Image 1: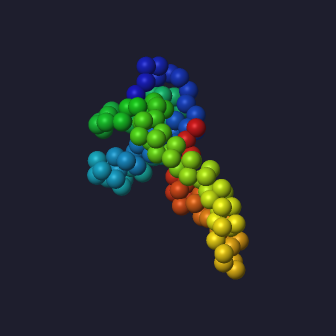
Image 2: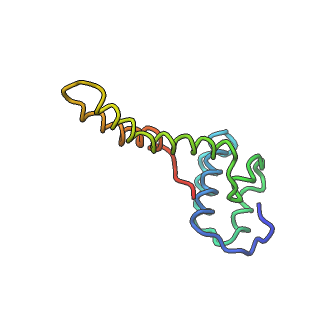
Image 3: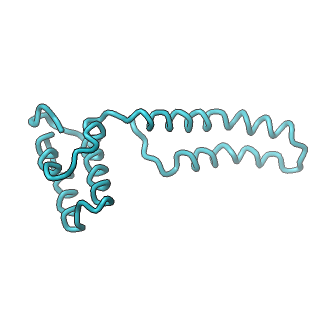
Length: 126
């Protein structure tokens, strides 16, 4: 996973490691006990080497995710979600002035609704 195992890690690296463990657990590569034990070790890890030891017997099908690089498809997906949320206030404003109904102000509820639907279940990546 890393070239310098003595380099200290932070919260972001621990979060990525926990996500990767969750992926392996969901794929059936880890038992509940193994997942619990390794998750506890991730939370106490201080260096990259500490994390590396937890993944030596697991397939490395996602080394880019562990090192902090993002897959291209995720960036594309994130881009269209951001664009949709950014355009939604303009759509709500246009509907407010063009659709002749008594409760046109309800179109402004599309703004938080779109944000919730498009980003509600997704973790923010920096």
